[in-house]
Image 1: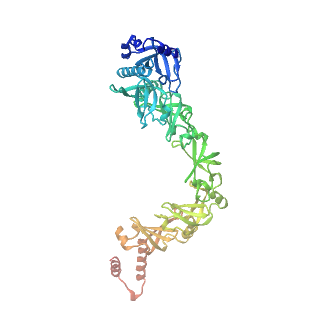
Image 2: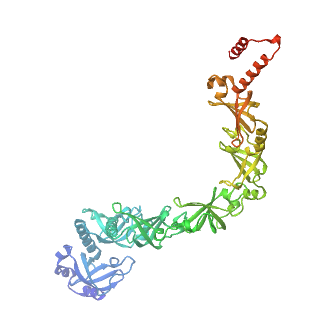
Image 3: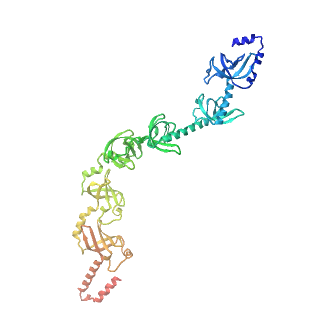
Length: 569
């Protein structure tokens, strides 16, 4: 360039005359000038534009994003003439101005044709609400239009090239707004359409975990995301998907459900494997004992993993025979491996109940090893229900008496016979526990000898004193002794027909009566009595007494009849 300047300066021909020979119309037409780089000196680039003088270009216009020169000496280049520097004798040209002119034409064309255009993100706006993108001319890219997802690190986007869609233009200011998100959404929809068409329920495909949330994990299937719900990750217990998956994991999943209208896909991992609950009753029958691991402790017990996907509950009540523990941690801890026994099973509900105390002999079983059927034992009334009574025999040992084993006669409630806290005698009536593993006891059996004694001493026709217990439609229920009941049928009360109201007025519970035994059945433990028969016997006795009396006691038949009428009145 120095030679060129020297030539211009030493040449007697005036530089202005040279300029006149140059086609000034071209300078003013904004048309591109084709040239070649002949020298690069400091901040100037000398370009041969095919004229008697050279073009000078600002070096900054040829630097790339990283500040490196994009051209070298000898490269062809298109520029636009700006003006003439008469003082120094050259023509000022611009690459940037030409790029802006061409860039605007490209942007305008892309806007009209609705076609995408490539650009480079160069600046973050001061308010950080968007970017400036170099597309020959600077265009504004709102932050919401950068990506489908929220941009978490805006500065990392600087210097990157992307395709954009022009959505708005201002011709006067030669500016506009562009969007990358629109293209990404269109691309996603196209991929979604193609991928949805290629997928089928039951198909196993590969994918990558893109994000993990509390309720599951999202998996990219190649442009389309599907959800693996937490419940579909494993047959076993997981508290959070992070226990099994990590972002970036490449996994195989099974397509469970496809919603083409909503573009949603449900995926599963555990479905690739056989459900461990199939034929589980064969592997874990009731009574089976095995070593298993404690995986979780709750207030009411501990969950035990029998195998992956199969857990059983060890309830707090099944930890020990020595009463209910105050806490589960007294006996087990997470991670412990211990022997347990399968005690209950529900395949439909996917529930298995396990026991720890069942590995040992029950206290009731130990009790029956020391005591046998027919033995009379002392017990304390612990709880009275409508149909049975629970009795405490020893520490940790309970017996049960059914209401039918309390008395040979009918009682409405055990409370008629005993009270909670009372100590009573009872008889062991079986060498086996009942279905609730209680010692089977009876109270009425204690009266067997009393019944035999009563039947040997009292025969039909004997008169005994009884106590009224209850008035019914059928008659009067009476107590002969605490363990022996009798019944006076309504026809055995009086010769005349009597109603329930009449009975309730005449007789009250607790009244003492004399009655005659009319029938007694030892095998059935039944005693029937009669007031009517007793009255007749006494009437006959009274007549005979009067008939056998002395002269001073002569009584006529009329006197007797009058006496009977008075009694009935």
